[in-house]
Image 1 (cartoon, rainbow, N blue to C red):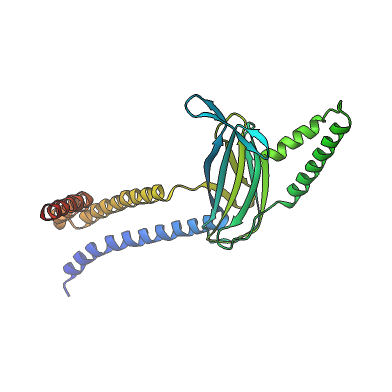
Image 2 (image 1 turned 90 degrees about the vertical axis):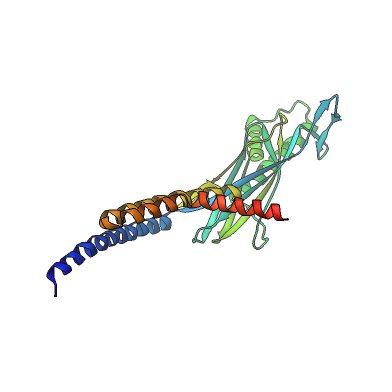
Length: 280
């Protein structure tokens, strides 16, 4: 056996092998860390869709438009839908959702349901009990005003009424993985503007994040795939060139072709379309 040939073979074989082992070890460590992080924190995605229903205006062009809700004149009505998606691999229990609007708005009506099953989403029990108490107090206050014209509504009742009209609390007994829900709100804004709606969830190991539009998400995914793919490709060509000096020229050619592959593909695609249009 030629000792010199064996040594040359080992010199060429060992460095790439060590590089692969190091890369594999780093990948395993990163994978374990990400899996541990995923098991500790669940991300719920939400999106708020606001649609203006009608606005009370007095305009020379459009004329006078008056919007009423249950016989009462309102300035602006909006229909707002809040979508929540649990695309994690964790089933959640007893999830409370807090929703509130700005001080120049109030919630006139609400409902909610699970997209998959259609089951209704109810108000949180403690909030519902408090809500019914305030409604009852308001009814008693109206009756007191009818019997005693000089009756003054307590400031505390005014504050409590305003709070329940700007805040809603819903409860999800279960929120299974890969499911979604919708909560619909009818909102009035006193200044004729689009209301500001806020959503919050207080639950252990759960974080609420915004959900991007699907087209934007796909575009972001495509850009990241291209960028990171090119980085890995360039680094791979660099390390291969370092270990195999006699293959420098082919590696450079392949590297340039790989970097320009999308541009070359675009030119070929445009050329084919141009020829096709000329022939048709």
